Length: 307
Image 1: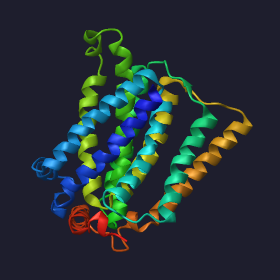
Image 2: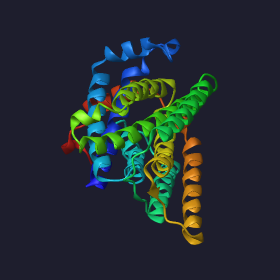
Image 3: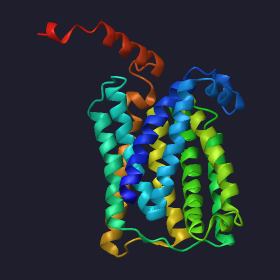
Image 4: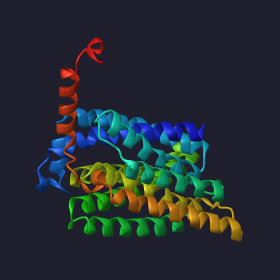
């Protein structure tokens, strides 16, 4: 159940990222890190559709976390990158070469191999207040560092940095959601006696804001690559430190886990060199590409006329 729900959440999130990228792509460059970016997005119907799908994705993810461990559900969400590449190829008719396919396979395969080697289990422990304070402080500092790094550099770098910040806030939000799913079993009245629902409202809005900046800053594959790569890694750390998830130990298994992470890093490097990520090679905006695709479809000859 947890695997299926997480995979569906990954698919919905891939569609969401494309729709919201279209919604913010035409925003002025100076709107980065400003509320005017959100006001611009809200006026676009396609962005609102993406936001609605984001709520659907949250429901799927929350339900998956109810049935599975944090260290299990979040790695499955890396399949979003494969769904994204398929959307780019089928919907926008981007030509995906060997580099894009190899990078996607390495990223998803590396995380999957890590998941299989580590075999996370447990995750029934509820963190105490001290653990939440430490996790919140570390996550907040990491997000601040990524945002500062996103203020300068080429477009692909800024998109990747915002994507990294989004990944951290999303992983932290997933940890809050995981705790809430445990409190719900004790009754909804019991839920609101804890800080998690209130903090989740803050981090949820922060994740949406950072995601829009990531989509606006540069190529979508750049932001989604860092997002889908770092999100499960940060979630694994939070699962182990907060919820007492247990990873398989021993020299052989630790070696396999490290090797799987090395494959993951290699996949990120391969995708970072892709024209789709760097914004080179004549890859245009999503709206222009969608218009071209529609134009080609309208001008396509009848099937009977094809040789």
